[in-house]
Picture 1 (cartoon, rainbow, N blue to C red):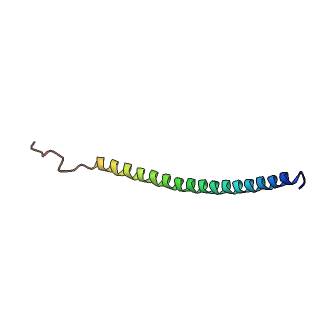
Picture 2 (picture 1 turned 45 degrees about the horizontal axis):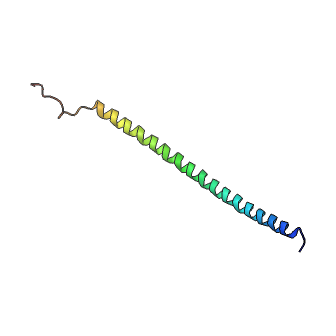
Picture 3 (picture 1 turned 180 degrees about the vertical axis):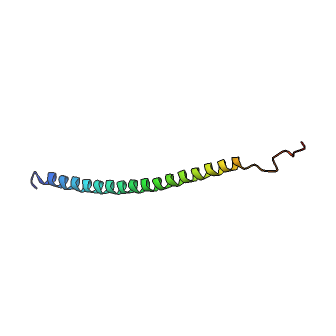
Length: 74
């Protein structure tokens, strides 16, 4: 066994480990990108619902319920 063989084996092991980690980082990045897209969709829907609620609330304030009004003779 020559002196360089253990070093070459170690280099190969390190390259394999690096390749594995690189692949894992790409997978994690893809997952983060997907989650960001989904979050953007949820945020847009939330803003839309907030707008609807605000609109309904404003509309409700302008409409008076006849049952809440005092009768004219009161």
